Image (cartoon, rainbow, N blue to C red):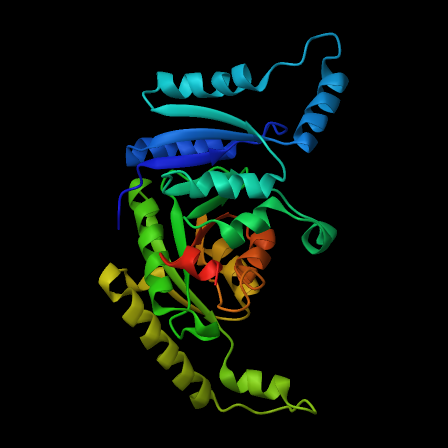
Length: 310
């Protein structure tokens, strides 16, 4: 696990929400990393800033982005952080951001995220979705809720390797979640969600069947799943109370666990599938992002970028 030496924070020039900057600064301090504050100024962003300015301070000149971004960086430098700033004008936003990530040495990308309507998710190019699909390094999408004093990191794992996930991905998720948990003085929780095979079989039968599933059948599968989960997490030496096996769909179960155990950051994996390219990359992470009550860390395998172009 190579050290994170640079953290790239994507700053939204149209928003007063700066959780990404605050959380990025905390991680930069704890990891002794440089903090790169980056703005991609699009035509849409310029129009939004102008409209906001005319509504709030029409008698004053519109402040240029350079001094504005420096005013954010200055107090961070006063705290001893190594902070750089950069502004680029480009469209579309997601393409420019991915190009910036690919041509930087950032080991972590952080961005504020917002709720998206069904229409935005279905019909519009959404920056968060594109970053989940295409960002080759760990991506931390943060919400306004602050982290607790000793944050809890959840690692959403798939030790059965459903959907052809590579075995390496679970360990990448655990490694990145462990890194942040240690840096923040928090704790790691390993989580695996599943729906019992017998329940799936009865649900997909045509016509649908009502099957009385023997308790011993469910218990045998639960034990097998727990053995798989324990095998994946054994080298991380997690206490039993920090290893969670949950029955339910991924989105519902992860959101339930996040609330029950007060998870601050949920780490999940995103994959690229040969032949389908970007179509299915990160689809589960996208669905969970909308409903999770906490931040989302999206992790890729080291060969993600190679698979993406195949």
